[in-house]
Image (cartoon, rainbow, N blue to C red; front, side):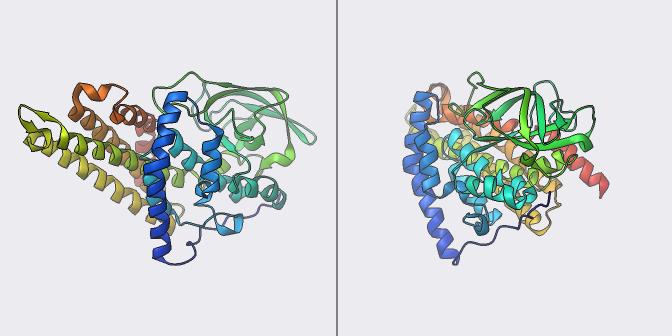
Length: 389
């Protein structure tokens, strides 16, 4: 299978004023429609189809994809500035933006010309949804995956189980990473674009999570589900390379910036509350203990943002940069946990109750601890790169 090589994102048409206008548009959207959707998703416990349609119609699902694929071609560092804004909104909304502006990468890097027309272009256009299916309940997220395929002529038969798959029940295709039957290690893996419905496939919604309410997370069961060989990305033995190569680093950077965005929201909520809440005749903001806490929170947000953007610039210079994105994710997530903890402290008991915005922000922040790898995974990645260098 001859692959169509992905090209780096090109700068958007026009100059900085064009990007400034786009950024202002996104900021306005998040402050208005974003708040509407946040309230609705929390109330209904699901993401309505109308939200997907609205984000697509605004062009927000194709910000980072190159123009040649139908995207808006926003470079990674500029895209991250937009993602920070989206991440001040509801966790489900930011996950839609994050996933749709990232999952095109492994497909673009390995698609044949036919697969480009059938999968990549409709994905960037927002006509289809693709969910990334790597994580399994009984294995680590890597070379020890157990889902397997047996090949018979032009068909693979997929057997196994996946879980925690974002948008796994609403997607049109699943990018499933499995292994050839009777193989071990990364060299036995394959990447397949598989429908989540049909013969041999069962997709069920997982129980409601602590945060990110409304976000579709699926448990997937495959029982000799037939998948055409024509739906394979790359070659047999390249599954993990498809899943991780050229995709994991920008995805970690994006996840790191979502931490910055949500921390920024927590800081804003804490500042506003400290300025209006009065106890014993004084505003909370007038108390040195609270003022110092706000100062520390603001420093965390600024430091995390600077590190993420620096790591993104390193990746744009060298796509093999691995340690920097891991550092960014590690630090930004730690900063997010500190900032949201402090924001809840400043709100006091009232912040623990659902009418308070910080209650949802606090819950949503806990999810970022696990997305794109735990802190321990980031530390192993960083240490390995340091020792290798």
